[in-house]
Length: 441
Image (spheres, rainbow, N blue to C red):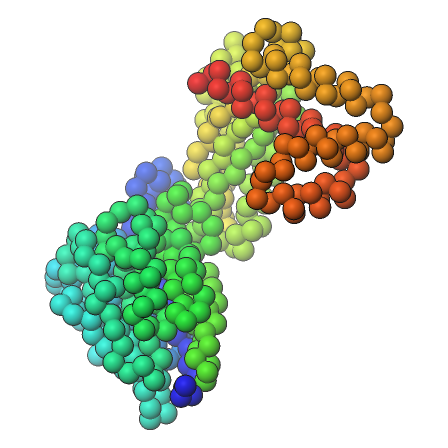
């Protein structure tokens, strides 16, 4: 295989510039509203900064530059101005259009720099990238011409110069990852096209479908746009060495992060305990966000006496308790750049259970609890080593048919009798919860 000149590029997708953040934008203070309004633009600016800082040779945008077919003039201007920064550094950019920004929707297009190439929708095009007088990469791509493309576009790809490293740019749904019909294809379609690196778009969560020859990667979106898109978002910095080996490094670019947390009330007896736990989780989220603002959803789970208090069924607590808790947790957050804004507090708790009463009940739950008690009583008279051996035998009997049993059996051998008894108690609690939840639904 011919040696290639080493090079680097940025692979990003799903910018969704000017996303309206529906359902959240109109429920936050003006300061946080401004941060949301700017988030998608600033995230793309961080992509551009990464390209400049890492001195890449080109930038790939794999579709959905805008959030909808009626993209605003403001979004067009901000996008063009960002690409002008690349142009001023002699960094080429290539764009494949997706289902949110199909070619037919790019009317009244603000002029893009001459170094930008937008793929058409009639056939796969090839864009050569030059460095030191030779072609270091051929970039192949095709765009969505209309909103609802259901054709397998991957089948149109083929390389014209196998000796040159090839990048395929496509906005598509591989293996029905997104449960939709936009440009569907299979991983096998991509493997057999002769492409070295597939720069994909459409799936908003980062996924490495294959890590070498060909690399098949979804970088995810550059900025999360809803509570369904939790955790870091960004782009990929891709380095290709002289032997055409590929190293892809994730760079986070999100300005505002979305997170979910669950807080259990199992050991709590006072509302103060709930508030302290919520504040603790809020500060943990703030620390993990590395200076970003965060939109946080919290679910209260578990069983305990506070269930009636939290659900507003207690006669001694106000019905506005949930709103009161949220108001306290939101207090002064809009004044911080690293805000943690509580999007919602979802009460999913259950009433406390009197296990001893349920154990005497003549039903399936009672049978389960009585069998558990009998097992515990049979172990009570044994010494530690005998108890350990008996517990290992019981637990192994339940798990022997599982695929991961070899790994589990090794872990069981390392456990003490107390460890194993703890497992038994956890299993009783989990089983009880599942059975009772089945009764309650």
